[in-house]
Image (tube, rainbow, N blue to C red; front, side, top):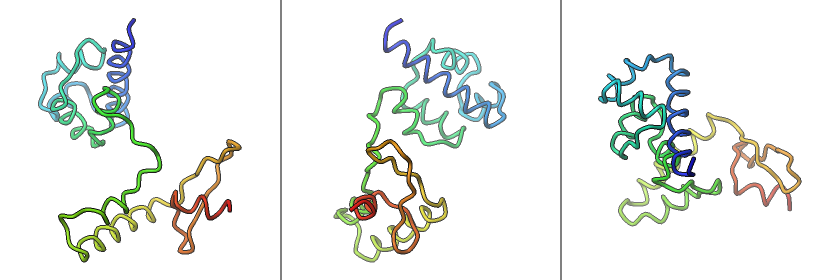
Length: 146
């Protein structure tokens, strides 16, 4: 089996797993996603290569990120864990400073609600790293280790 065929099979298995986690029948998910039952079945078995639009419809129905399916399908490359969303918001030329502050506050409140996430060190151990306010960020890794 080629690498591409394996990727489609893995994507289909992932969609099936997500459907099971959501307690959805194949028929129900196909209705929610707006695709035919046989077509969704073929996607789950890795026999069909769905378009980005179909993947978006499936992701929406499963209530997961369409980016997750795009990465699994090879449409997008996986982002590194060190993504700097706050930096990207601050660099955006299309929104004003007040809007940037509001977006950053909302984002940080969501992150704080999730709680600290383990950060892998070079030794292979997982450590929770937190800032002065108790939130965990990748930026605090260097400060905690240094």
